[in-house]
Amino acid sequence: MQQRRFLELDVFADAPGRGNPLAVVADARDLDAAAMQAIAAWLNLSETTFVLPASKPGADYRLRIFTPRRELPFAGHPSVGTAHAMLELGLVTPRGGKLVQECGAGLLPIEVAGEGNQRSIHVRAPRGVVRSADAALMHLSLRTDRLGTLLPAVIDNGPRWWCVELADEAAVRTLAPDLGGMAAASVATGTVGVAVFARCTGEPHALVVRAFVPADGIPEDPVTGSANAAICTWLHMSDALPARRFLSSQGRELGRDGVVECSVDDAGEVWIGGRTQTVVDGIMNW
Image 1 (cartoon, one colour):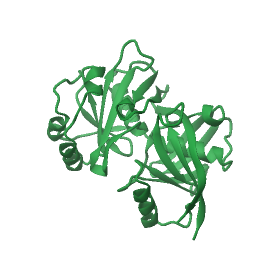
Image 2: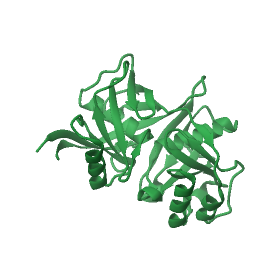
Image 3: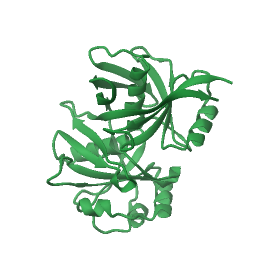
């Protein structure tokens, strides 16, 4: 039976138990897509990543990202967490505090600062674009009329997210959507799920976010990098950013307290990141 290094991490967390769990299989070169999907389904976390040698010049490593049901071209907490895992295992060395990740969405730059559990890692998200879609089913599934000023939009940054502004933080915190209807709306519109958000005042964080992915068997994702990046993209396109750099709060409704650091650089590119905690460091037999 093949033994391979295996880590479970808590991403966007300043302590274990506060972020979004991620599994990382550190040497997956002998696994095919079916085996990767089987492992991800068995682990049953929102995402599992599989690390492979880079196939493109300039990349430090390649990763494939699987939910329990499908492969994704990009996801935020798997990108941040896998970079942390590679650094913890001593498999990559940053050059001037930078790495390059190869994934289904292409080559993405990563910035690294600090060491260990205090290390902060940021990834540049794929450039988001607006996709047309009928919002009727999605709107019904929210079971609320407490919407914000921005119109709902589908933002494609690898996965496709419905981004929906609600009226205030309380509207987000207390939202109880129809998850069956939301799953049907996601399938009908070709989206991975729905990310709701609202602005906050008097808090360290500028936004509160929740992300629902019932079509993938994940009723609510604890802390979601690609959803936060999609929201940041939509706010930037709408000239409605709270700041060029800000914090997003996600996960309290699930007993977490994740923090995502979001920013838009001078070129208009969206970056998301934060801290990662190593929780399990061991060997997988598969």
